[in-house]
Image (cartoon, rainbow, N blue to C red):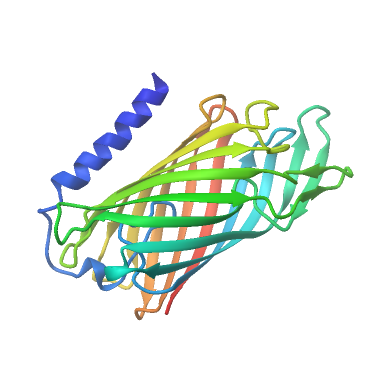
Length: 287
């Protein structure tokens, strides 16, 4: 029932975006800047080459052999639109450094963890295609698929290696009601992941194969002020012990039409990990 309820939340978000597609205040131009929130992706593809640099400071992450993992990770991403009217987009996502402290589940020993990569994020190539645009349909929508692999390992202070192998297949869907003359954008994303040949990563047991599903919904307000407020709700599950729900207040600051700075603080609860928090700062460049 808990998985059914999460699916219903996602469906309600989709209906909400459709219902509000032809309503709303028409004071500002929502797409003067792309104003993409941190976790929920815009359904419309990037209109120019876009680079994201992200710093995540996280608390209380659980892996297969370690828990209470507190630290940070840094990620780079480049998105390149192509095709007629930019109907296609290719993205390369590269987590390039992680560092933090954790506790070994079996012994309770405190350890250091660091390495050139992410935790649940692998180096991934993603291909996305727009399905509909708000100029012709009630909403923007897009679908994507991706494949990623672990390129490096996480070293530990107990002469062990975590997450030194693994692959992931991803499938996702985005929807929003963004058009140029709307102040308020509602949007939702679903990101499904299948991990295989993984090591020391499964958050619920010692299996080398597992699934993650990430659902998110966001509202972005294109205020006339310099700072554009946004709010997201996140839900993540591995269909086992990991059940995380978080709220994310955040801000987006567009500087001209080439630079965007955003920050957010995700806080919530996990059945498998207790209280979880992640502070994120992202800088977006468009060329």
